[in-house]
Length: 365
Image 1 (tube, rainbow, N blue to C red):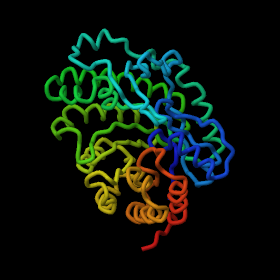
Image 2 (spheres, helix red, strand yellow):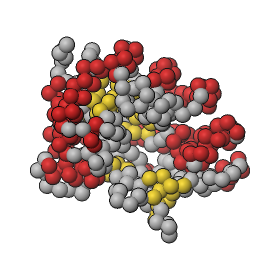
Image 3 (cartoon, rainbow, N blue to C red):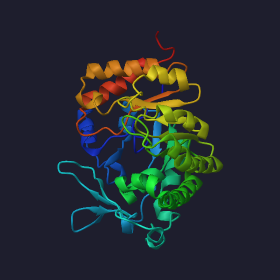
Image 4 (tube, rainbow, N blue to C red):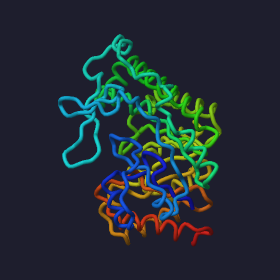
């Protein structure tokens, strides 16, 4: 059974627990390679991938232009190339969303006059990606993954502010659609150049856009079908026109009711199977109902189990998820989301060692 650790910016580990893991494994410290500087998400070193028998390897996401990286503001926030401000909470390594440039009462005219990010085709954004992908393809047996930064829902929420974005869906859908389309144009231009660089060498292309909360979808079915699904179709059709890689889609939350739509859109892989969200803990049902159409990727809880459980509890849950989702293939084990600083190295080791020990076909009854 395949194992993933760190191949995407949603299945990895942040810097503090990564350094603790290095120490626990007896590895000499090295400066970590970051996938996303503001969130402090790591691309794990080869020794760790080999130790945990990881089957996947990611290509770092395209960079922002050097002129836009980590522009520190007088109030202590950091400005990104979209004009979104990020703030570092006290005692945390990563940055969190603070404020978007379209909060208040923006108009369509404001969208046209806004200084949008620089050229998405700028070569510096993709420096070294082709060479890294080709080397992994020619010299290793990893499943190679590349990520399209996104998505259009999430970045529109950052730009507009969460409350404003949700209000727009009902009160000003023209603005909401125009904002999402402007973001989507940029992301697809970025995706096209990325796939030109690495498309011949990758097996999986990832795209994420959170569509649900802990207890259900973020919006009504009617709004989803009118405003979101057609734009997701545009994304997925574009990806398929550029490469033959499997399409991996990330959406947190209680997404059971959306899975038929995602299958209709043609995704191959669903991540992260957030088992603490409503309806998602019954992984046996998910496999029975949708396993013929989807690969499930994730499933090991990062909200409660990994930070607060014992190694024995972690091992027991790993066995449960494998027996639920790996029968007949179609399951890749990983943490539900990035491992944070409250997770011990012992629980990380327990998760991956148990996955390797138990994820051997044929699975026991």
